Image (cartoon, rainbow, N blue to C red; front, side):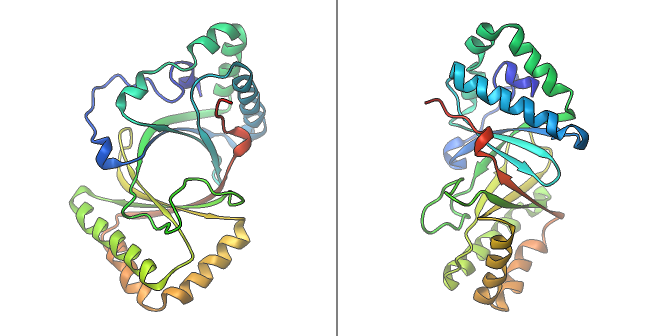
Length: 248
């Protein structure tokens, strides 16, 4: 997590124009790909860093998540590209001095690669009829589905995603999901589907019940997406309130 030294996620130097009003809510994500042998050490350093933030109170915020393949994600909302030029940790780093440097040296020992990128919430494809929220009380378990596609199939995939939402709406599905679209810093086009549950059993139960609610028509509808996808990836994990931060 050495990039946090300057801006928390990434000090972008390129000029890029993005229509954030069209993209709606946007988030910058820092992803640490932690080595399996270093997970416990990483957890120790991450909590040390979180404690330091609660002490020095930098003016920024993020939610955190971990995946089943040991990725650690730190997700911060942004309003526009200018937010990436902010340096919310500058005063904290100055006050901590060598302790700040030590924390990030310890972080760097825990992984061989990390990256930062932007994703955008796509509200009109999201199915959360009771209100859209990235986090829900008591539902920290997550399933993440990545649907990749080529630029030539972007319109078809979007049409398919809309058809899926229409089916869920018509059937009154109780399995809710959020849709995110890749943004700056990603190398491929994808939609990310995020599904919340209480735990793995609750998630599997909801998914099974949802199959009955949607009925056999679901296969024809899902094919409107999958027929144009270049590949599909599925991950599980959990939100980590203990690694999240918001100034009090």
